View 1 (cartoon, rainbow, N blue to C red):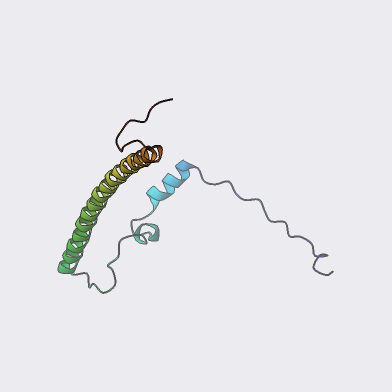
View 2 (view 1 turned 135 degrees about the horizontal axis):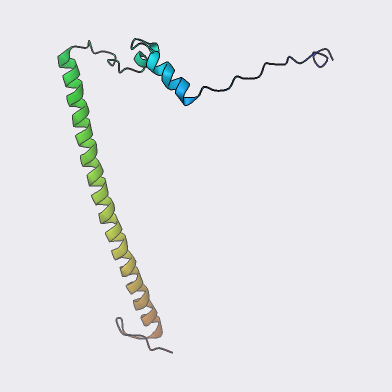
Length: 117
């Protein structure tokens, strides 16, 4: 019963958010060393000392990875196109097979046109 008898603390109302002009003025007035600008700067990945050769090797590695990704993506697209074509071919073969089976069950020779009506 003691906890329900406590008075609720009334918090002050929130201030209005800054306007775009106020935000831009704040950003323009901040020094370039401000943590907001430096915190998101690219850092060297662990294990690299930051030498130019290491940075170049990393760029080359990323470039080769990108090339491999693009080549694999192209191969996958071509494989997908081939599979779609094979699926269409199989569907047509299935339709022909169903027609042939239907003709056989009616006693007509395969490939013959079924009589209408």
